[in-house]
Length: 308
Image (cartoon, rainbow, N blue to C red):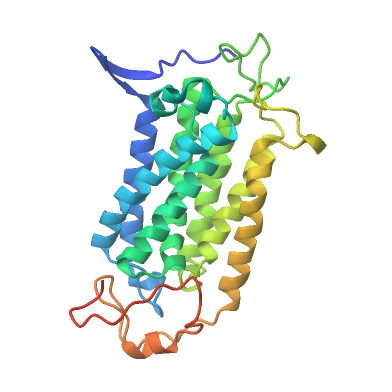
């Protein structure tokens, strides 16, 4: 089938252009932010440990995460896929509006932002990471839809009836791999994480939700790489591997470790009174939490005025 006649620019007023690609980032960040706020305000999701952060803290976190996504995504794309730009045309690094964002780079940027925010606000790093991971598929879904609208990151040639003839990709129909990723990395992964947070109570299992996201993304990305056209400017890697596969392997291993660790750690007993998002769990619940020497736990002296 022919590629739909999409215009990458939604609205243009003089030199100002509003692109679908930018709107995808805005939608993913805003919807993800509100989704996390609803989770920290729901005491039933973590009745034993209480919320990992307050709603105002999540409001502050959104700026840190946004910077991590943009800076990390752009630098990751340059370092992983087009390193020659650094010495041939360094100003191109700043031209984010031209496209060229790496998910793996964005994930590293978000991880750094979450670590810095947790340390600054004396929050549990793993539990904060669980919240961010739970909403990440929302941004992935919109981002992959934007890739399809831009007619980029297409798949390999196919005879399947849903093959799409992309502009600039030759005369043959190709897998719409962007839509495959939107379905798997966005919708399916979101459902899996939703079950983990709202049914299995994995927000009580520190780091397990983040681990499930990492494993799920790595597996789905590796599957789609089988039909995704490799980047032409990259060398042929051995064993049929692609850059996306190799970058996903550390995510798979790290995610498996976080799931193992989270399921192995005992969960403290739930307090007798419900814990709300604006109040910390009772002192006895905090004392019951294990592994006080956990390197992932960030603690500070108790604040007599309330939670940080």
